[in-house]
Amino acid sequence: MRPVRVMQSFRAPRPTTNPYITQLDAALAAEPSVEHLRFDWRTAIVGRYDVFHWHWPEGKLEGTTWWKAAAKHVLVAAILLRHRLSRVVVVRTVHNVELPDVPRVSRWLLVRVDRSTDHRIVLNETTELPPEQPRTTILHGHYRDWFARYARDERVPGRAGYFGGVRRYKSVGALVRAYREARAGRDDLSLEIGGRPSSAELVTSLRAETADLPGGELTLRFLQDDELVALASRSQLVVLAYRFMHNSGSVLAALSLDRPVLVPRNAVNEALAKEVGDEWVLMFDDRLTGERLVGALAEAAAIPDGARPDLSRREWTDAGAAHARAFRSALAGRRSRRRAGAAGAA
Image (cartoon, rainbow, N blue to C red):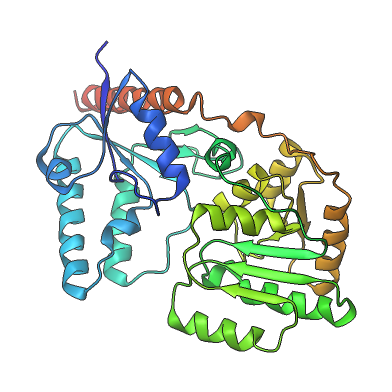
């Protein structure tokens, strides 16, 4: 049986590439049943491949100028037309359930990407999709091996930490306000926030909110991996006060560094707590408050040094083979639907 020729929507990883993609790239390159193609526009539009695999398709629409963004929109439309007119099977990993907040034309194209998808890969067992949509579950892998090369700092008692992109839906401002409430009654607490903001307005807002905040540290730029490891390992608790959370690489990054997380209560996080250990995934209901932050820090302090969450279901060793099975399942499903359609037409 010949290898399945699969084009990914990502290019060769760079130092700033999401480690999930970098590790998946390596797993697919090592999988003998997959001919792994990294993305390039020409091959995507006119080249030969069996399967196209989307990750965060909105990233393909971005440009540093309006005319570059416009050109990207035209090229993505060409890819969609090619997929519609050919036998290419389209697979999409469901990193986010909802469409991102983008301009109308971008949203129109993203809806077409979704409608063109033959098979979906979901990263957790609680992702809800319509029953008629074929899917494969491949749990999001951990980052233990990825971070193993970096030195860790000693955890600082009473320190809450945040790392990752600073975006409105991630509610970093809500964390700052909860910390301010907590700090009003506890002068032994501290807060460290690191990550690249999505807008200048967010930078201005966060700097204003933390200007007079005791024990608060801001690093508003992209964190290198060694900086991320240092920030997370210094933290007694990593706090992610997102308004909505589904698949969070930051949660798994913190757990991979043996640090508990405080996250919103939902089905995804409740399932994760059962999987890795309740003491590692602490939750808040509705709005994060100073009282809940203080309570979660106390729970985190009770975890002994050297303890580790159970991430045994999230090893990368089978990721390449698991994706290969998903690609073949997508191909088989597409052929089956075509045969059924031909029989119905007859």
